[in-house]
Image (cartoon, rainbow, N blue to C red; front, side, top):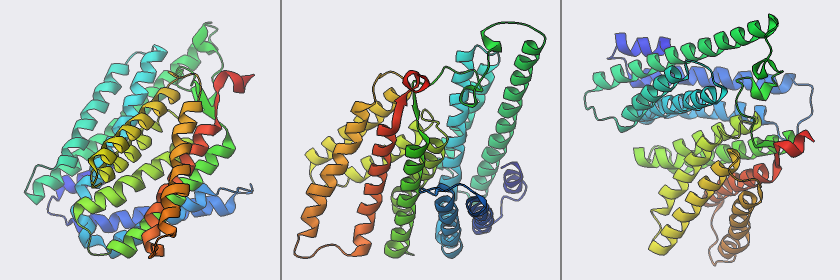
Length: 366
């Protein structure tokens, strides 16, 4: 981030197309790395998330390579979204540090809020001069990279201090053994997810992202405007990748962000419905989904049954009502026309799998 940001600041006339080619290289290297991790693994996995993630990154690199001219216009949006996601994660860390009673959490909070402001400014992109946009992108990337290093250094120093106090014989609740999930001394999560449903959820959402990427290339190659590319490709892909990463690591609280992005995607789709009643009902459902997930992940609800039902019932409705009606129509959709629906069904199945795979932390410990 820092190196790329300095490139933008020092050379604001650099072509956005060149940046796309740099991203092609980064995605290709990351994709090959995930493929190597999968093929070197000795463990049998029925939901190969590393394989799917590697193939998805290679596919994204190919799309960027072939459509660099069109995607270059979306560069501020793409990088702005990345900075927003990074700042949101730092924001969560700040509140967890506050709960743990660690000093300096306000500094992490301020850094995260400033980063959010940078990212939102890049998403809005009020500047018309290309060089100004590139300088803004560079400043945002440099700031995000430096604050990531500061946050990591701060947390590492706090961990060393805690371990040092425990080693010298100081007793107290903070000197208790810490599991990997509670390395920041954060409040224990109310719900955890087992490894099998977590892998299943990750595999399904990555498969959904792959289907949507193929559909977009087949249906909108060279013809999509910026709004279509953001709503129908960028937002769902970002949501799927983040959800796969967070759920596979058991970070159910952080997964609130990709669930919110997914709800935003469905709300934007609902705004195009011809029926106002249908639009209102769908928006209310997506708000309920986000609220229930956040309430469950953060422990405000003591059971995961409402969340499981709100993910499962729409999935069943889609298959047995909407999709069966389309199949019985005089002119059923083609395979390419089916792909968005297949992508949505995979997301619904993934969320239902994750919801029913959650277990209360106290029950799991017992």
